[in-house]
Image (cartoon, rainbow, N blue to C red; front, side):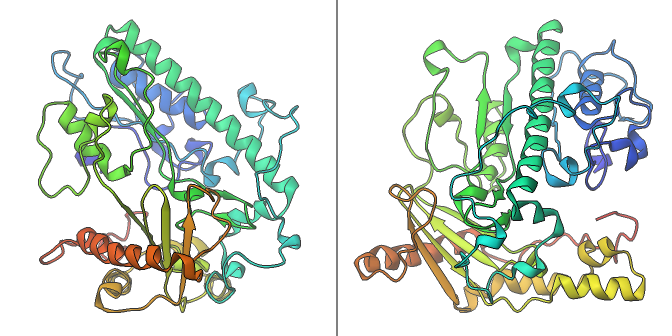
Length: 413
């Protein structure tokens, strides 16, 4: 990754709330907390007069003033790997110590504490909650959830402040009227809704994320527009290229949604396909979903994955670092994940199915898959699932980049 950017100020793996604890590249920063350290990198990249960071990698002496730039700012906040490491240190900004702690925060709609679950959302042999990542256990109690929620709000406030600083810096450098800002997130998260915790399912709570595009050159009538069009994260790259006057590569599967940003009501797709093939040893089933604006169909495959609980047990017994056991990717797993990808196309049948009317039931509480009145809807979505998964997989021989611990033993992945 370091060789892929003209300017690099980042770390492999999670940064944590205090990035200096995990990555030497940040040691020269003045700040200690994640949003503020990243803010220093933003300033150095944009402003030739900003303080130089010794850890950052510069392949250009200075950003060329007469050329366009693309600045990618990424956090792993408010991810749990960052928020749970907040220590409320004495020298932390007040945002991260006291903010929101005087509020009586309400629990999410449909919240169920672990002890109160009578009927699990999914069958026990499909979603094996005993193998769930320990980092999601805060959802089991109302007290644990509220503490993590406060930390998430604090982290988001720090990010919000960085965005404000970014806009001010662009204005100070007279770049504000010619810089488009795209703000989005990677996934949502269950906070105990329906007794669930984590991100590895195909429900709206995890897959429906915001995207905000701020274009200072947009005419007044195009500002403040909202759209419920079916768009995806894979649409961001081709859209950015198109807005910059660059033709997106034909290999991109995402769509150029710049017309939607300027107010067009012409849809770029009629269906969205989503899937989760990862974190299966943490008890999560392989699952896929196809949806339009009204209906969503989810299909699950047999969960016969090896248990993370057993991996942790044996790691402790043998003396292997737990994170190495849980997260390192080795060559034999390439075959496993390749089969995850191809098996449904080759006839693997789902063992459980769900159908939700998103208009009438946006929280996906009532599964209509076995409702005879919706048999035609279900049949149509099953047909569309085959079309969309085939499109997603593409044609011809798959291009695979082998990026495993066997090939890169020091890659920290």
